[in-house]
Image 1 (cartoon, rainbow, N blue to C red):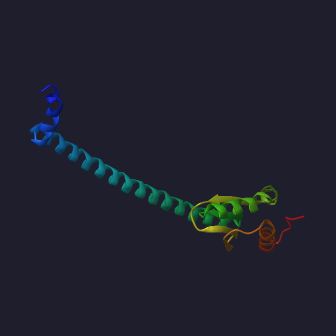
Image 2 (cartoon, helix red, strand yellow):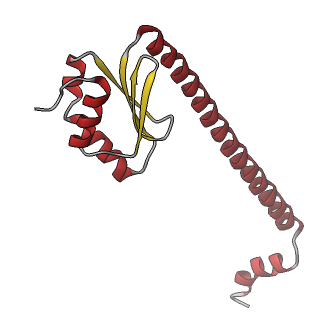
Image 3 (cartoon, rainbow, N blue to C red):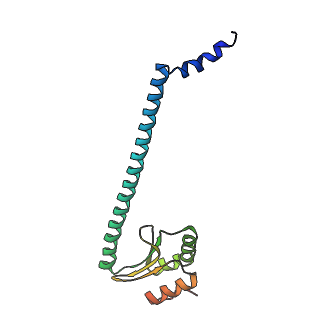
Length: 151
């Protein structure tokens, strides 16, 4: 008799107490709302990422038209790649970046399209996919722009 009060909650739950049933229903409804909100949040995040990408692509297209109109020299480093390749891309450019600026070649880093380098001189372009060693990149730049950057 002394421990009967300990069994009372178990007895109430097993008897399908209306309060317990109502709380379980409210709990299930809240979980459903949370799941719905999480899925809506995921959809909104995807939409915002798509909008940012579309805006970035439009900006790239507009900037490319400026490059063509002004006959600019630009190297676009496309960073949309894996960690190791990205590291190789950045290391290969690091050595020549200041020299390129001195020669009037603008270096731009983007994550819009692909992985590699885009050499532009007005309307002429050369796309190099993947990462190159610093020496190979220097050779490509020197050949495309007809300049000397390596010692």
